[in-house]
Image (tube, rainbow over all chains, first blue to last red; front, side, top):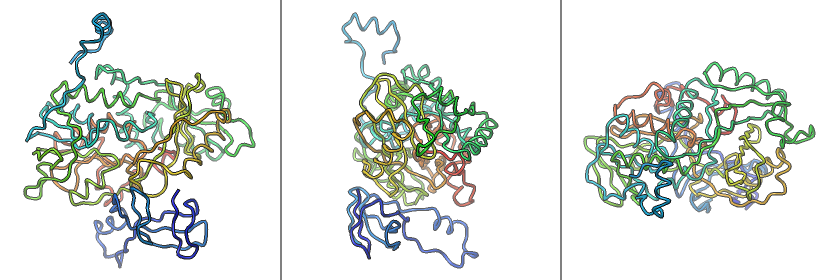
Length: 80
Length: 416
């Protein structure tokens, strides 16, 4: 069971959260971006083993989106 | 290598089982190979076997960080089937199933293929309508499936919950009778033994730490047991594709998740087919030892830990017990997880990587075991010829740039 730090509600249990992917910056304006850059933004991932920057949503709680760094091997939260 | 046969069994019985010999060698790595495959699971070993058997390449090495078949090949629920929605997928997975059907003879190793059928269950009228559409698509793809009424399903699986007040009531289903289960370890061991007999070096406890380059092309690998040159390098590392891709300097359209599986204590025969439910994600069969082997959805956050969390585990058990109430009295014997590389369209990546000299066979997500013979066959074709096979072409990495995805997550509407 993960115990994740919601910025508003503090430490809460895993079932209250939804994983929201890796942080990425949308290339703009989309109409001028070439296919490879767009594919990189939409589909390609770092998918690190170890420290991993990721977005979560406290979907079953206050609804807040937030970014944290989590170890994908030990599941320890390294930095909120 | 001793050929396995009834006569040999008798002979060795009289000889006190002293003359069997090793199933594969433990070779000292050479400095140069025509082809190196990273990953000694089913896909990697099958690739080496088909390189040697079909393409005449015998100066081949399989490099495995741990021991062969110790990753997802030994962690899955052993289901083989080809009931996929899109023609590209049907061609791919039916190639695998057809190769599985002849594999025990081909490898001279009993993979214990049991074509007991896979029954997929629908839980509402609407799901039945969608299932009829899927079944028609599969029939057009040439896959042998039959739509079943609720009565038919009840006959096939008498223990299924028929209570209309169940959380997931049973409305019918469909079956692929050629589908079933196979012994997962035997698939790895059989391919390893057969590849070894053709001259392939299987090198265990050998971790790839980097690649050797020449003019932007991969020409070899650095390993914990020294550097080795290679004409072509194949990547078949299941849950570690992203890690190896990072070492080669590119990213993949993959996220890695933990997929759990469990077995109950062994009981007498109660389930003679495989059941599968799209709504709950459940798949369950009974092993030859009598254990119920089952699993369902992913732990839905990235993980490289080969263990699953309790919340997902509870959901899986609850779903199984709702469908098969008689299983409530059973105890859980073991629970484990494997790391699966999931592409966004739930279809694999086969073919050239973004760097020359390196070929991919990854992204099988939660369904890699059923595809082992095809994955090996197609990666071998790519590595030997430098070109796609018509069956692997649609699964090229390029599809994420062109947008021509093969969306089996939405298409088949099933857990993989």
